[in-house]
Image 1 (cartoon, rainbow, N blue to C red):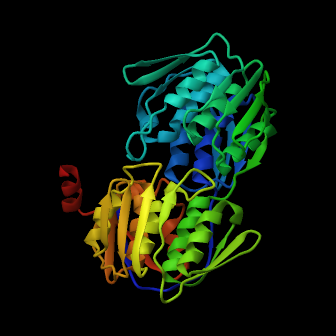
Image 2: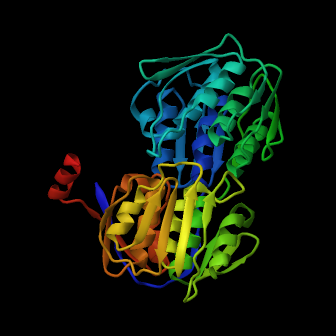
Image 3: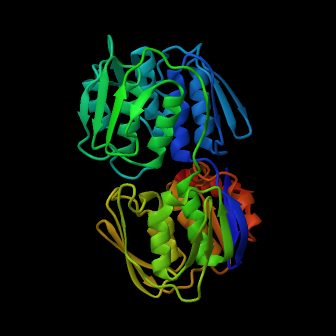
Length: 428
């Protein structure tokens, strides 16, 4: 195991290229199960979630080849192998295997998913959708059993807007008989990306990106080649650290439309932001203004950028309030930021940040993926050396992080944990 060490205070300048979208990748890879011939996905990020999904596809008999950022999956030899335990538990997005395997094989056994601990994130809307399509769903010994004689189209209204449920129902419905209508569907760019892949495979989908998605089921899907969209959360993270420490940073390979809420908030703080066709230029200013943030479903401010943005607000003059309406438990980074001298208090679903404060280097631990992002940004802003442990979380979502940060002028490196540190972590 390793820790990330950051020498703070260095100005950042240059160009950073954004990788393919993590939140797309974890759905696109399971979607390949639905095809009868090889599927190639281009532009995948170098993250641990991709490796875990590769292993899971191989576990059910798929032939998977990764060459740099390109993955080719031959699903023709796959079988409906139960996946009750093991790697499926490490990854919340493994629930997409449910929809894909149900669509292809009309049955699946998938262990209840893991991932970041952000409080209750039930999959009841997924199950509601599967049952509406004709599946029997039971929970047996901590695994979800899905069985159907055949799947048939249905009208499904989601009680809450859920990206996971929207995608999972799409995966199951594309090979069901008849028409499926998903109402109150999520609109995130990742949903459009998955719908584009499925359409290229031969699915008939209309309305992806709106709140009503219509699907006409088809009997078979074929292989194709697909290029993943850029990661808007990674792009937003680099925009935030450029707003904190950037003399002039170009974020390359982005879709600015996906980041309008972040651009608006940075400009409200006084940050200089200029967007082009596929690039965004960000430069900090001496006196940042306090702003309030409320996370909302897309196209609102993304919950995945709440934690990194909280760190930036420690530099702003005045009081800022950050409210997370999506995940109430997403404030585990606050105690770590306090170790670094931040003046923040949590009240219910909100964090109140008072600034400006000069952060100080400290030993901190990432409790989840985006908490990790908030801490490496804090390390770049702080005086002295910051040590971040819990890198297994950060590695789930930030491709080639050390190389990208150092390429902008940061001083960041990884070190192996000492025996004492490993022993201490076991006892926590």
